[in-house]
Amino acid sequence: GQQVMQIPQYQHVQEGEDFTTYCNSSTTLSNIQWYKQRPGGHPVFLIQLVKSGEVKKQKRLTFQFGEAKKNSSLHITATQTTDVGTYFCAGPTGANSKLTFGKGITLSVRP
Amino acid sequence: NAGVTQTPKFQVLKTGQSMTLQCAQDMNHEYMSWYRQDPGMGLRLIHYSVGAGITDQGEVPNGYNVSRSTTEDFPLRLLSAAPSQTSVYFCASSYSRGDYYEQYFGPGTRLTVT
Image (tube, rainbow over all chains, first blue to last red; front, side, top):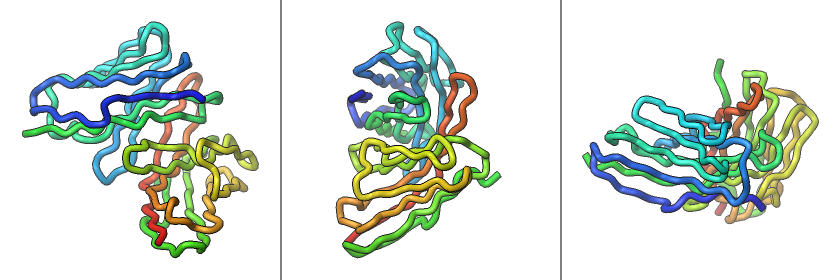
């Protein structure tokens, strides 16, 4: 079946450093979504990318969808302690309402 | 709007017991899903529904039943709890807006089976 992969599962950065993580799919995706889960919380939708090569920015976060629509990246500029959490990517499996999530990357930020 | 609500927040069961995790949304969303989250495993889809009366299996459906009699409610039933079902369970709802399907998650239910 379709796989959505995020490696590594943990990353530690110094506050102020940039951070980039990647998401790879075994199949072409119609769209890709990113979610953030704070420690002890629930996943919260960040963004959805639909078009090949699409780039979207949210303040210090930049999201990109690959040209082949099989991978995506999340870049955080000048990380802050508020960026701590687990970031998941997810792609639809068949119907758009049925999502396959990656295992997530847990980001810790040293102040 | 309350969004997506889940009850209970915490539950401890003994092996073999049954129970129902409740999920409700007040956003009139068509789609609802149940996920379980285990350390290192991400979010895995248990069951989902595309509307009242319509449900389908996800990646890990064994040991769980669902029904969707109304748009608002999507309960998850554990038929005979096993220690392997110890997990955090999240319910989510979403709507379609063209190509966009943003999912809203509930606060979760932390279940321990002894």
